[in-house]
Image 1 (cartoon, rainbow, N blue to C red):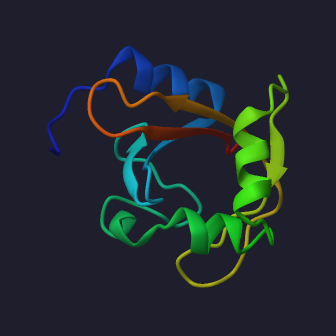
Image 2 (image 1 turned 30 degrees about the horizontal axis):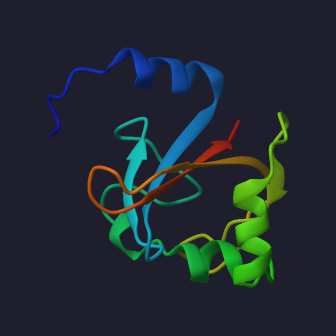
Amino acid sequence: MKNRLPTLDDEFLRFAGLVLIRWSSRGECLALQPHGSNFQGWTAENLAGLRLGKHLLAANRLDAAAFKALLQEDSDNGTPLIWQRPDGSVSSPLPVRWFRNPAGEGAEQIFSLVKDA
């Protein structure tokens, strides 16, 4: 939606230099906010290719147990993690906070809030 008006959430995320990524329980990227943003080379055009396992867990050499521990972590500063870009290069470590929405209204979703500025 190119003519979409920015929401207060989008404006806040831009101002704070944050990116919110919504993941399915299978590790598929469902959405990226702020709308129209570019996160380490990931945009609306190639976002369907962003995978939690390949572009975050493998890049950081994390297994399922380590990832579950990250989801339980309650650090105010976030955990520094690298992200693999679409071209195969990797980012410098970026602080990431993790949140889960329980499977009450459909399938469980995972959210990552990344400081990208």
